[in-house]
Length: 334
Image 1 (cartoon, rainbow, N blue to C red):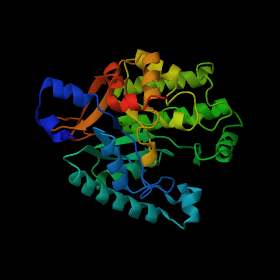
Image 2: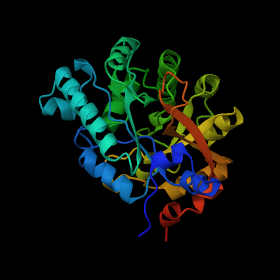
Image 3: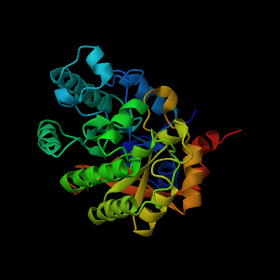
């Protein structure tokens, strides 16, 4: 078996051919483990072992940020958790992530981060306090709640949120993208998570947003703002895993972002070892059909000047090169 080339070798310098080979390797910028997330599976170490086995080049650890007492999920309430419990779990996650990052330094480029849950304007103070106590190399800006209600947890909770938007799905979409805009302006996240997550539990998750004028105006506004500060939108394969026709964001949104000059990265949003790299081949085919020719990825590098992602830089590779890599070819449906 050939010796594995470490991420350190890449950063410090190697041949152009080796750089090309490395840049085509798979990566994911969004992951969770059962050790620190109640709706996931497997330990954080098992997750990283699986990523190494799949020859991932970059793997970001992005456990959910702790939330306030009023925002506990049903599963957390059933376990008797409190907001302090979530904070203790997050402290344990951060310590373990740092330990594993050092342990696997010669095998995989691990980025330590978190997935932000923007719930209401007051979330900003809570998040800034989190940032002041933990050093992240990357973070994902996401919206999972509208009117303080989770919109991706169950059809019932989605319906509860819709009732607070006047029983209108279209108005709920508008409220979701307005909340997302608040998050984008306040945090300018390096990675925008599952941009159109709001469609997951609606009656027709494959519907067109462009037919709804108010919704589409908000989508365009959010995409344009993301481009203005240099944010990257993830192509998130979890949507395909959950039965949707297209990844997040869908084709019409991806084309709009591309036309605005936006950049995309690749994420599996894995919640266990069986989901690492899941549906990546379909995502690459989708990217090709939409017209995306390059995929960006984050990696540790001393030249970084972005305060949102200290010690991290953004590189890119051609979609056509990625499709020819053995990992992506192995994901191709039979």
